[in-house]
Image (cartoon, rainbow, N blue to C red):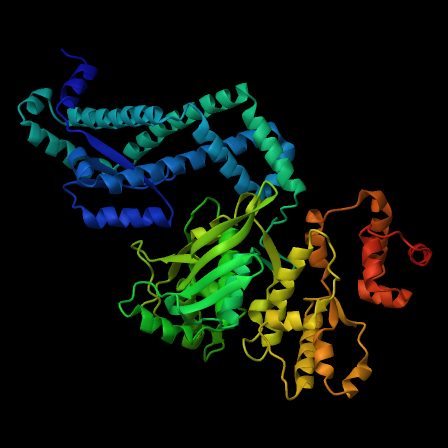
Amino acid sequence: MQNTFTLVEEVAAKIEDFYILCIYDHHYAKNQSVLLQRKFNQSKIIELPEVNGKFSAKSFVIWSKTYEQNEALFYSIRMQARQETVVKISKALVAYYIEQNPNVEKKLKNPTVLDDTLNEIQSLIRATSFLSDEEWIQFYVAFKNEVRNWVIESLLNKMSIEEIRQMEVAELNYLFFDYMSSQLALKAEFMKFMIEATNRYLDRWLDEIISELSKSSKLQSILGNLVESRTKLGDFSLQFTVQDHLFVMNNLPYQIVREAIYKKAFQSSPFSSFPTANILKGNTEGQIEFIPINDEHQVDRAWQQVKRITDIDVDVFDALCNLFLSKKRVEAEVISISLVDLLHYRGLKPKRSGDGRRGGYDAKQKAQVIQSLANIQSIKINLTKLQSFEKGKPKNIKLEGRTFLFIDEDGQDMIFDLETMPKNIYFTIDTAFASYLSGAGRQVALQHKKALHYHPTQQLYEKRLCRYLSWRWRIQARKGNYLIPNTISTMLDSIGIALNERLPSRTRERLERALDQLQEDGIIQSWQYEKWDEGITEFKGWARIWLESGIIIEPPEAISTQYASIERKSSKREQTTQTLKEARIEKKFSLLELAEDLEIHVSELSEMERGKRPITKKVSDWIQK
């Protein structure tokens, strides 16, 4: 009597080649799963059930002939599965590193440090000689053979070898495929077997990768240096909300897009038939175009739609940015959110129903956000000149692409419509912003959530000033000099407000009222004019002098504390300057209040606090009180 192994080999020789594709559980994968389910019938593809475990994914068994007919599609799925496997291995290596070095666990809880660490490890894994194409193929062939043999053994338990031998090859293959489809897909032990088989390879890979990297101390060196350097650089994104503040991107292209929206800068252009905002700002040149997605009447629709842009679009833009920063863990990840998430970010509350219970958001609120999403989707960046830095040296680059990409359940560009709006919104970041989310180019800023809550017309000054100050404070963070006066004309231009030429006092009063409101809401700690003589207002033309005057705006403690790690410190007077700041905070003085109390200029006091100027006797005496 032949042994089971020989019988299995005999039957296996007659089974046509097939592929097993594993699609992991995120939105891009979900689109691929739907495509496979719709594109092919059950005579060609088996979908296996999902099982929780280390190897958790949707799996499809595909005949070789079907694979060859759709090779491009299936190859891309296989490459995505490889990438997901590398991600899982990188996470396992981080866990291994933490186990060996428990003291770094707290640092790696920082999402920014963890993102950069995982990306660095993934590059390291791909560069190893171990995970070559040949190794992937060996894994695939061995795994496929294990699955095939498991199925054949199950068949041999149901039928005799004589019955199988009498079958035609085509009939046997049909039986093999049908058995997997109708029987094995329903049995958890089959998936358990697949999980165990996969995990055996993953565990072996981990052992061999750790061994290879340990020989040259690459893993220890790269992880140790990366964590330490990221911590020293003060990548302050320990979380994505800090004391009523949100983290948003702070790169120049991001700010340019926001300004183009709230300034409604889209006009006709000789270079494009679409609404265009021309950019000429310092070393930055180019255009931002307003081009709707997939519309046969694209140009006409663009001009109609661009008339509906509002400050709410910027609210939604910032909300999307914060959501992406907080959820993104791997490059090009697709994030799932809901319309309610965006309404909540705007500070809106659900209406109450007749019985006093929450009745949900009204149609108008939803329509505003949907319109904003459609507007954001239509923005295309084309910067022909943009200054970037590589190893500390400036260079000019080009930047082109959309801001965020929105995808529906089928992986197609999402169509925003109130009547057909799905529960979930899937989006990712396009190439224009991708480089600003990792590595040396990454820069995010703290922005008070009130910027999204203020009314888009009644509190326009407050809303835009909040964003402007967030941008300015982050730029000033490296030097820590937040008290450089803001020239009023520059500030008004930055928030898109023109001077009321006929009644300039109205512009001044409205600006001052807005600054008072920001102080009351805790967005700024204090503000005051620098060297402004109120008597000037009695003379004709005073408004021009006022426009060139400065306003000193002190940030709240949350800003200076959060940015402290990226401020370049002067060690010479470190102990004294820390004492001054600690004394000021303990005695509950703002910089402006203390400067006024000591009768010295606020910029001088700020420089003393930052170690840029010696502590005077007057200030030293005040500290000792």
